[in-house]
Image 1: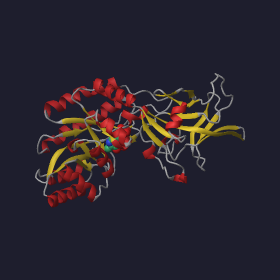
Image 2: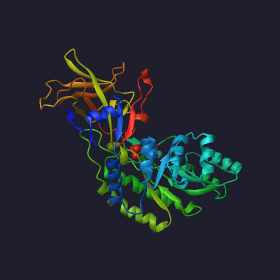
Image 3: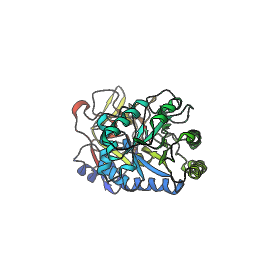
Image 4: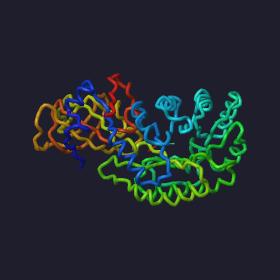
Length: 402
Ligand SMILES: Cc1ncc(COP(=O)(O)O)c(C=O)c1O
């Protein structure tokens, strides 16, 4: 049975400060300190030569991009707007890797002319990149995103080793090598992305090993030493009570020999891992307020002004196969909390007119009153930007980097 715990605030901010800063509306709060310590954990554990890219899709809040960009080695973007946000944050274009299917011509034109590294996702995209470089009379720095033949297990979201819109199938690479003539299209490296949200160090190591084997297999065709080899990421975080913490020391032990193998074969190549949620997810909370409480057919409801429109993933509607509770806490307002436990199992719900707007199902914990704050943890990634914020026309949630 999942429990609601009691918090006193967030990063030194009291309930009152959170409410005042957020203008009494639901809001996301992200902690610089927590992001910084997670990135330090990566740096201190993984090989020193391994480069770290931040996947902006996890959280594109501009102040957060600015902060993270200052302490990582590069970024992974998937749209014109993410690319421009990174340029505005001062990321050098040669440290921006632009992946993703369906890149529009204006996106490719901007990327090529700025010298952004483009991960080509198909043969026809490679052709478009070449045409644009011809028209602009410049060089397009291009990585090949490869969809390996082998199936890589272990990730909750698998994005390689199977039929997919992502990457160029290993079996189609001959055509790609023909197009990479190193005049208009400059070979900037290889990108392999096998999946996300993996909590098994063993599975991550297996995937990385298979990726490095594939890089070595392809290397006979490389026209020159790659500038970058991006091996993806997939490091997961514990969203749910029974999830284990990823053993990053074990990941590092598995990765050291692979980094060594790559460094000795390609001494000047930057070997990247690209991570989103691992760096920022646990550094963020989403806070909403209890507007009403009631019982219906014997069930107790805590009704908040937040919900699915602000934080889709926390309600289990972001592609999760089974709905489970993110960890919820409450911050009491205007009273001293007693250790009195509610006798009732509660449903914590949002403000929308749909029964799927549930932030917490069958929870036990302290008594919760109108005015108290509900805190949803693991809100630093795939939160606001991955939610239908216009659905039912409520106010958008605020965002603050503390
Ligand atoms: C190509 C690519 N890179 C990076 C990521 C970031 O994943 P995560 O936030 O799980 O690290 C994703 C997620 O879908 C992705 O598709």
